[in-house]
Image (cartoon, rainbow, N blue to C red; front, side):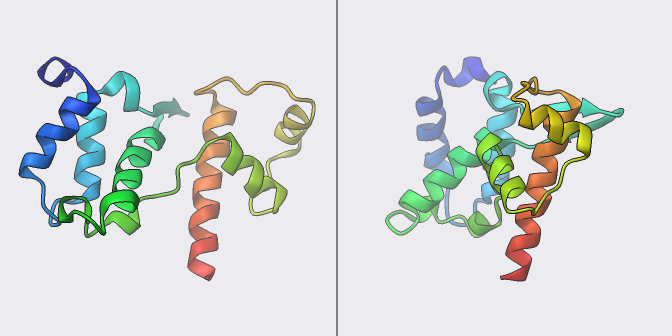
Length: 142
């Protein structure tokens, strides 16, 4: 829990003591979410379904993987390349611009009229989830 570590830098330092390249990136993502839920708990309820995207947690782990994996085996996570895309408004806009995702007419009108989509709203979560699927489809075609 947060009290045990106090800060993200202390958490990462302590985690590195026991880390190796066999440590799955996915485990570190889950651990970040559980240890710092206010910061990394990117989950919402949509139509009675829990939808978790974990953008920030994956971003932290992914950045450590990409920056340090060639220098330090503790960051060379075997599954580091399997982290999903870090879905935010820019990715959603790009996927929409490239027509990888096509929102319904009502949502398109809201977007084009610059109506804010509140964080965690059904539309915002659906758009981010669709963008994540779109990214995976693009990757599969490469």
